[in-house]
Amino acid sequence: MLLTYQYKLNPTPEQIVVLEIWGELLRRHWNYALGERLDWLKRTRSQIDRCSLVSEPIGEIPEKPDYYTQASLLKQTKELFPDYKSIYADCQQQNLIRLDKAWKRWLIPDKKGKRGGKPRFKKRGNISSFTFPRVNSPKAGAHLVGNTLKLSKIGEIEVILHRPIPDGFEIKQATILSKADGWYVSFSLEDKTVPELLPIDEIKTNTGIDVGLEKFLTTADGQSIEVPQYYRKAQSKLARQQHQLARKTKGSKNHSKQSNKVAKTHLHVARQRKEFHYHVAHWLVNSYDLIVFENLNIRGLARTRLAKSILDVAWGAFLEIMQAVAVKRGKLTLGVDPRGTSINCSSCGERVEKTMSVRVHSCSCGLVIDRDWNSALNLLKRGSVGLPIPGCGGLGDTQPMKQQVSFVNLRCSRYTACS
Image 1 (cartoon, rainbow, N blue to C red):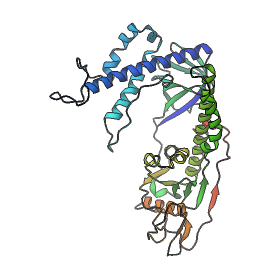
Image 2: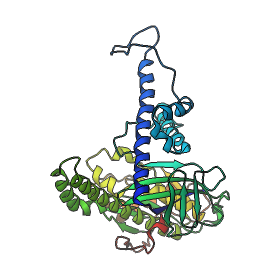
Image 3: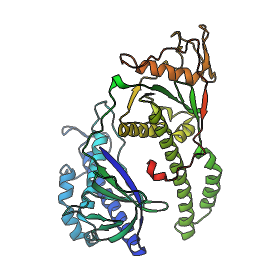
């Protein structure tokens, strides 16, 4: 099992300059390597016996570039540009590995036939992270001793260890990254022991969860959580800051300072949302042994007029966090097809057509409940088919009291302990 722990770094001003230089040099190298690949693709995009209808470059067709050919030229790069000698060699190789993975995700579809986006050229400051692939080994470029991280060609940097690294975990790699409020290190930790999942016949509590924009989620037993809307609440502040940024001269120190203020506000919103997701995920995993959720096409939904609200709640990020928390706790999660769950009656199965504006499910069988509650019940029934777990039929004559669970004003004493 792999975990990622992130800690704040406290580098000296001289070390900050070195870190920024490394990021800029690696950005340039990324752009050059990507340009080589795109140039080869452009020259070889048509068959050899015909020409493209679009303008075709003239000249010798270069050899197909890949990670191995580009990594073999690192020595020549250092000879032509001596500044690259100051960068640890493994970091340059990891930069090319990242590009190679992005390139393959774009050209080679996965098992479901989906491909990633086209790799892009990086603007100044875009590459703000680099990776040391080995930590605390004899030939490693990074060594963590106590609260001090020693990096090759950079020196010793103080690490703010707000939580200890778990016993039994091995640090596989360290990624140095820059954020609006400073520099951080992310340690990838590996535990070779596989957590034991709860056997199906031992499941005692289960639920289905329906996510939405009016309520963040609703469970099959009628509990709901309100939407915090962190981005919506920060919009007025962001608008003022961005208006001030637009009045600054680009390239000036005042523009840089104001741009950093905008970035810090966005970072604060992202951290609020992430903390909220972890609180809800831990609450669900502590309360239920099996959680059935809906497999949504979030990318497609984000293209609608509700895009801002959908991206603000970040369902995809929450579902990933919930599944990761469940695995660590040995609990079970199951994704099912959501089609028809809000239309079909959870009690009798009859289709009750309704528009999105209708928030109450009212069926001829006598069942009148909240629309999201009905959908959560259907999700649980759909995910429980064939499983020897407690019954999850319709509500019948007894309907549980619907409760509102609030996490919006909850404050975590140690935020990063939840991440």
